[in-house]
Image: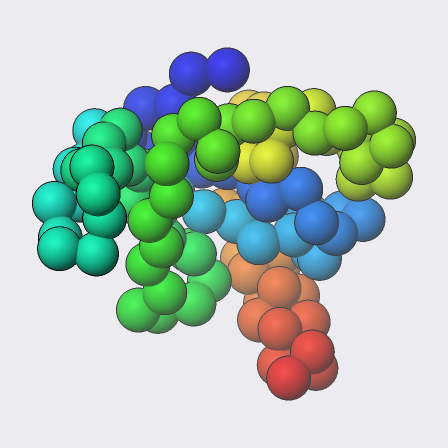
Length: 110
C-alpha cells in the first residue's frame, strides 16, 4: 500500500466507518531531528483526523502502513493499520448524513 498527500484513510480499530477514525494524509517524508533520538527519525507521515479539528498526528510510514496480524484482519476487516478508503467509502464519508451521524457518535463516545 502506498500513501499520498490528500489520501483519506481509516484506522483499523472499529467495526465500521462510523466507529473508525478517518484521517487525511497531510505530509510525507518528514524528518524528526530533535535531541531526544540517537538517530534522526525519517519517513514520517503527518496526518489529521477529519472529524476532530486540531487533531494532527505523526508516525513513521512503515509503522502506519504495517500489515495487521491475521487475527486483527479478521476482527477489524482490513489488512493494514491505516488503509485508504475506497471510492464508495469516500462518498459515504463526505455525505452530510454520515458527517452528522459521525459527530453524534463521537459526542456519545465522550
